[in-house]
Each structure stands twice: as structure tokens, then as C-alpha cells.
Image (cartoon, rainbow, N blue to C red; front, side, top):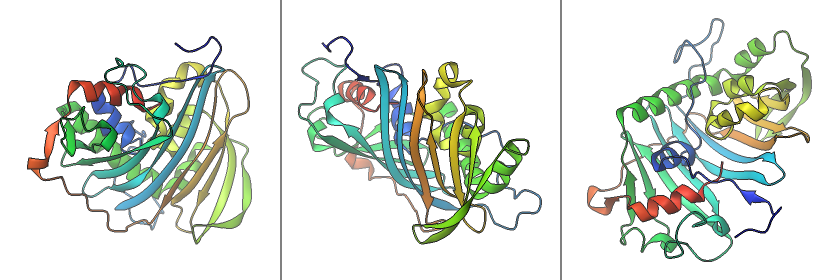
Length: 293
């Protein structure tokens, strides 16, 4: 049992495993961005909707002095194929904290979970530490529902629009806000321009809907928090980097999300059927407790 006052990580103890892998582990593709014209360029835009993009996420969320979460993920999204491949880094010290001692995974350090969403199905490569819980299956899948498939498909479509037309979207959201234009810089070899502005949580999730699984449920504690955000876009107005950092208060969020390699090949292939088993209940509970938001 944790000592009183010791900081603890918040785990997905109230979230179904399919949401963990199908949404959170897959780069945080979940909520709807609220864009009406999905797949259609806004008036005056010359850039075609992105077909694929690579991403990385490093996010720290705190709701109180004893309630925090850290999420690390990187991967690729294919908006044409409606697929995602991602690696989520999990603190090993947290795994098994909500399971029985028999199911707990010993050790410290970190564990990397390789995940895929392809052909309307969520898959996870089983880490060696979890092999016994998976019955030695190299890969497991998590059953999906028709509602979940529609949610992920819609979210991927809308994410394609939000990253492609980030500058237009940001300009519309901040038309009546005070913004600060920043000198150009280079990120990953790409020349970018920046905008610094305070956004509400709702505005932030429209610019970066990929953050919704982690932040959308913070509405009660962060609804009135102004989040200082710096948004960097390339010469075509596509999203390259978002940096956010609130200061103090009852709730805070800080982190960086980057996008790169627009249009690069990102084909995801489902694993051979003979190598895949349904996720066992014991492993589901371990996974359930391992990914913080």
C-alpha cells in the first residue's frame, strides 16, 4: 500500500481494454475534432488532405499533488487505410498495481507496448514479461464493437483534416484572441513558423484531437484553465509541433506532440491469423492497469 501523501500514477482502472489499445495506445486517436468538412479542403486552401503522418507524444497531466499521469507514445497514422501503428512506453513500476500478486509484473524501468489498429481490429505484440499471461501467444487482439470501429474511423478522418489545416483552424479559433507570432525556426529539418496563444481545453482538442483520450475527461478540473500553447506549422500550414504548459493551479498539463513525414508510406498489415489469440482476462487486467492517463 502506498504511503500517505506519496504521488501515485492514475491508471485506466475504469476503461475497457479495447479503449486502451484501440485508442490510447494507438497514439491517442479517439475523440471527434468537430470539423464539419472531413476530407475536404477549406476554402482557399491548396494543400491536399494528408494521407499519412508520423507522430510522437510526451504528455504529463496533473490533477492534484497526488494524482498525475505520464504518457509516451510514437508511431504512424495512415488516413487512407485507416490504420495506426504505435509504441507506447509504460512505467514497469506501475504494471500490475491493480491486479493480484500472481498477475503482477515484477521489475522496474520501462516496458514498450507495440500496438496496431488495422482492418478494424486492435492488436498488441506481447512483451516477454507478459508471455505467460498471454499463454505464450506472440500477439493478442482485443474484440471490437461496431460503435468502436465507427469512432476510430471518424476520428482518423477528422485527425487528417486537423493536422493538414492546422494553421487555418488555429486562425479561426483565435480570431478574437491575443496571439503572439514567433520567429521562424527549424524542427526536424522543416522550416516552421509559430504562434503562441492561450487556448481553452475545448479549443486545444480541436487543434489536436489526438490528445482527447488523455485530456477530454479533465473537463471538470480544466474547463476554466487557460492553457498556454505554442503551435508550429510548416509552409503549407500543416501541424508540426504543439507545446503546452500550464502553470500551477489545481490541474496542469505540459508536454509536446510532434508530427512529421507527411505522406510517407505507412502500410500496416494484420498479423497472421495463426499467431494471434484473444487477449486473456488476466492480461487484459494487467494492460488495464498499466497505461496511465
